[in-house]
Length: 119
Image: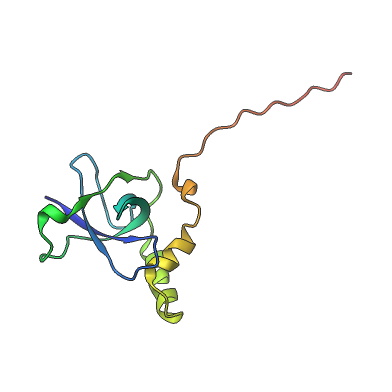
């Protein structure tokens, strides 16, 4: 059972363990959708592997991996720095960084028309 630690976009300063489904190829920096309580939130895979003291039966599974470029080491370090500098939870800073969840969804093409002038 593969496990990763995810920083969720909620005002929380801890990483949560999630099980990686066999169908997903998860790497550090991937944007994912995960269960948190009774809702679904976005997050970033912060580390591969998990805490050994959590029972396997309690670990929930990642719902979805977004088809977007991974978060870079620089971006994750910046989230850590902003959180430490402002004495805020890292999850709150991440919520500001990805405040529009639809931005992680694929771009929907729009058809446009140009009127030809009468000549």
